[in-house]
Length: 447
Image (spheres, rainbow, N blue to C red):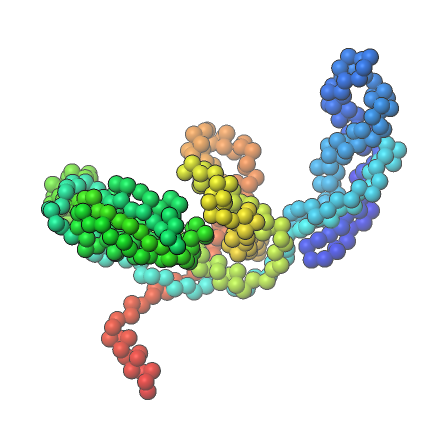
């Protein structure tokens, strides 16, 4: 490969002009001929046995040029990038094969897109505000109550009982929009737990106060951001018939209850364990919250021009993840788009803002890793390989030879960069505003 010229055309776009020598080109031509000639059938010769000059005379001298170009491209293009000192390549914008022949080789002009330059503001010791890291007795009570609900008996309510929160109501319902039946809005013998918020706002509230045998109509409005856009924000009516009202018969919450549903001998021990688990969950959520708020600040202050290709690739990833989630529920993306009356272009565009932010976060993390000169210690590598080996049930030495090892090591370095930023963050807990303090604030505003 001979690099003739390299120049920057615009931000993040470089033009490379290079030649692939005739010797290299002909070596690849020979290689692809051997591979592809076996498929060619010419009268008078056994399949795959026709001489090369016969095949080229019949089909043209340039028959295998395209295949040879594809075959040589990865190695020769990589050499061109190295010669042009481009180490942050992310995509090819366009390729122009100016000339190609057995005698002179290949002359190529290619535009490449590189990662953007990133300029960061402050990224350490950033201040973020979070909810206090504590668990109230009420939250423990509510969790214990849910545990009791899981083992509660469901029994018919007394005749004439009016529906209230906590009841399980078996009902039939039929939905209408503009007096036309709502597609997928008809069910019979549906068990609805009142107060759980299973249905859209206003539905359950209008069932409250009715009893077994009642037939009535309610009016609701679908949320503006409802997943099915064809009915989002629309008014609807539902005809409802209550078949039965049931209620939960909770067990007595005492030491025997604790023994029945857990490994603890006393209710107090169960409560302490619940409190500990809730605090652990809250701590984990706090870490995620801090990371999101810290990087919101970093992204807001950073200077970077993000190439469109990076945004599109991130959108590809989001669409792939969403498709996988749908398939886990037995739904195809195509059917989902048809049901929501959204085109693929519109669907992808919904991810744009989120994708652009994610790309900026990723670029910021890479820049921080570079600025902080983060390296992996032997202990870091050993620890991660042990976790990897345990996850995939392989020997730790095997884990070190996995094909994805380079990406895994890069991920370890980036994780260390994130930890550095998060560990330096200054967390301020939000102060709970009392009624008296609110009154004081209102008084102050009148002066």
